[in-house]
Amino acid sequence: MIVKTVPTPSLIFEKSSPGRIGCNLPVADTPEVDLETVLGPIRQSLDLPEVAELDLLRHFTNLSHINYGIETGFYPLGSCTMKYNPKINERTAGLTGFTHIHPMQPAATVPGALEVLAQVQDILCEVTGFDAISLQPLAGAHGELTCLMLIKAFHESRGEGESRRVVLVPDSAHGTNPASAALVGYTVKSVPTNAEGNTDIDALKGLLNRDVAAIMLTNPSTLGLFEPNIEEICRLVHERGAQIFCDGANMNAMVGTTRPGDHGFDCMHLNLHKTFSTPHGGGGPGCGAIGVKRHLEPFLPVPVVRRSDGGIVLDEQRPLSIGKVAAFFGQFLMEVRALTYLMAFGREGLPEISRHAVLNANYVKARLREVLPAAHDRPCMHECVLTAERYKKQNGVRALDISKRLIDYGFHPPTNYFPLIVPEAFMIEPTETESKDTLDAFCDALIAICAEASDDPELLKNAPTTQIVGRLDEAAAVKNLDVRWRPPAKPEVEAV
Amino acid sequence: MKVPSDLLYSKSHEWVRIEGDTATVGITDYAQSELGDIVLVDLPEAGRVVGLDESFATIESVKSVSDIYAPLAGEITATNETLGTQSELVNADPYGSGWLVKIRLADPSQAGSLLTPDAYTAVLES
View 1 (cartoon, rainbow over the protein chains, first blue to last red):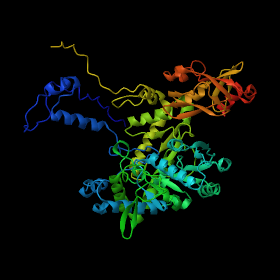
View 2: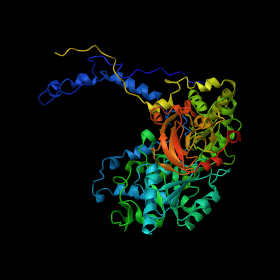
View 3: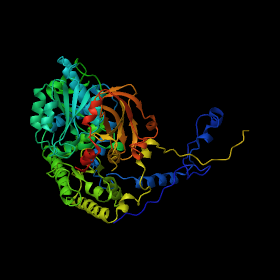
View 4: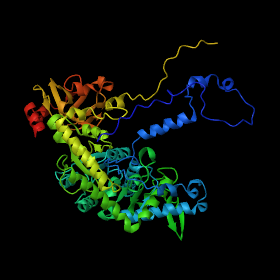
């Protein structure tokens, strides 16, 4: 089934008609000033659209209907955990007790807000197995960066800051990992993945020497596979005096079931906007809380929110702290949303998140086995990485072409070409919030498209054909992005 | 995939043309095809000395950002400045106008460990 073609909408500028007015201003109670006298002919030069309120409303409502989001359809974007964010989060985040306070207020006047921060920290400690949480980092990569700064401060405190200059990153890692390490001033070395999709332990042993400050490991890996040797890896890293950071992008596979702190990690970051249902991307902001073991706690950003004698204090007196990494306490209203989510599930309910996320991913992997085999055929975690290499060899149809065709079938495409070590990669993360009906419809679409890939490859190479735009030139979008509207040329107006 | 018979190759998909004590280096047809449309080529300054297998440039495509490794050690004597505005040449003509750098070789005997066209073809087919 193919959805209908969407007509190309006109721009608000094109709907403009001279003199049409969209608002009714109250009568001024101050003397009127002629704007043109004060500002010159700026009003004309701006060429603002002139529309009625109803035109405006229809324009933006129609635009919103072209948008695609989790509230319009399935969004299996791998590594992004595009789960549904329950609406009750918005209700609590909208309570005036939270929205009508200011971060500069004396702490004693906002005990409720401090309680939220302390409770989120307490629960996240329990969920991750770490001793302390900082909610200050403002996004995932910022959390990575903060953890590496803590690790650097830790080595410096032991007189090893100068000698430990290397951070190890697996070849399957998110690109943010080497970027964060480089930003802190470390040299990055790559650790290979073996044929089973695990960290190559022998290669790791060869790389682990006294120059290494840390290894950044994503578990489950970006291949959607749990690292079975994680405890041995942590032991090897600690034997060499290095630290091990867990990239928590894939925490949705572990919530309530297993804890990175117990695996032996020294620190991790969490994406509250992935795992704990706070809004994503343009609907953000992101939220990159971090968890650390006791030995890294002295270096945490200030102020540290901590319980003390029945109250909650904002502890600034921490001589070993790396300082602030953001203003105030992170994205406060996101913490309110995350707390709502955590408390709605409760201790008993949280494991349901990871169990259903893992079940859904394995179901999709099994249903697609014949058309898009898994890169590593073993049970996956919360996402599965499949390969479309067969179609590329057969008749030049790439993973990208299959994804573009999915748009015609009404689905948001999964992540393509990541991780980099899988040829023609298809990374599907259904999340726990999708029903079997939705997963079946998605798998049916992909199976139909893979048949088209063999029978009518041009159909895929020219897709999508049912949207307001067809196949975009991605290279031009990077090199020559031009989204500015320019008014049609007008006849020159003679100066008066 | 084109694998010209007058060049030498590395396992990481760079090609090398040796003339006297200087090597011209680029990426292979296979490499450009795998990367997809290339949008940025970040080349080093001339004069930089690079070690064998050292990353000396990065190529960004619509799919990924990739390090380019020096197939031979030496001093970079020239870079293909045209790629600053026309990175698509690496896609269109990887063995010609899409070349990356010229390296004055520190040790020409290193060329002995590069792959012949037949050996590189075997790598692609494996």
